[in-house]
Image 1 (tube, rainbow, N blue to C red):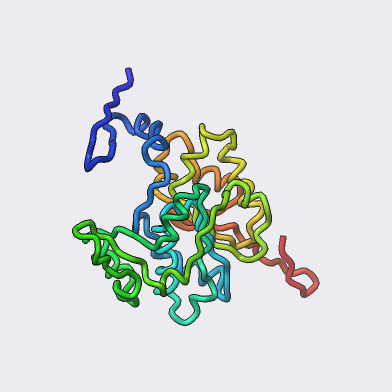
Image 2: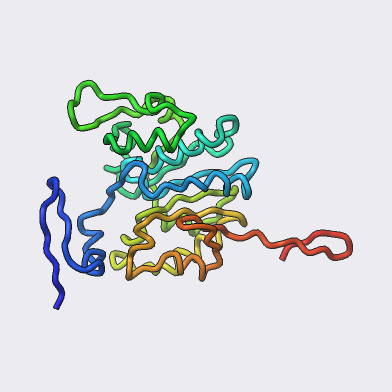
Length: 256
């Protein structure tokens, strides 16, 4: 018999029961939620340098209210102070217009723990350069995103499932994190089809970045689907469309 209870914690529902039962209802209560500085990928700049030393376009799908987009932009600005513009702006999309409006408002909540983590994560950027305390709201850790940071990001309504059916014309970094659990059973699209579309339409060296939910979901094995499509997992969360090794024939380098 399945055991599951729904309680209230800080005015938000949470579950007690098996992980499987929790994941079954994840989409019911956690749709379009986001959190600043979760599932960080500190090794991503090294991988970008290896595969795209000159430039790349950067996407953040399922951006929700913008937290992942801010993290990605700050990671690029912190890691590449002299050439971050080669990878910016972060083109951010969400299928929900209300989430895009919220992201465009430039409002964010950052608690004390996240603020301390900011200092450890972005050592070349002061917190105040990115976020300005909101004097009109007290005791809820509310900040306004600075104009400087907002200028590094675009927010638009977009459909991830449709966009990945078309070729990415430039070398690309694609954040699509903590969102795949919403594709089934709410749509008939299979995870394998999504992974295949990404692999087919990204240029070689293309980078796909997942989140923790893609690893926790016991029903949707996204890392496995990406690897079966042809991606290589270079470390947790980060997948690459491999670049084939050159072979020399008649003194010319060719690629498979």
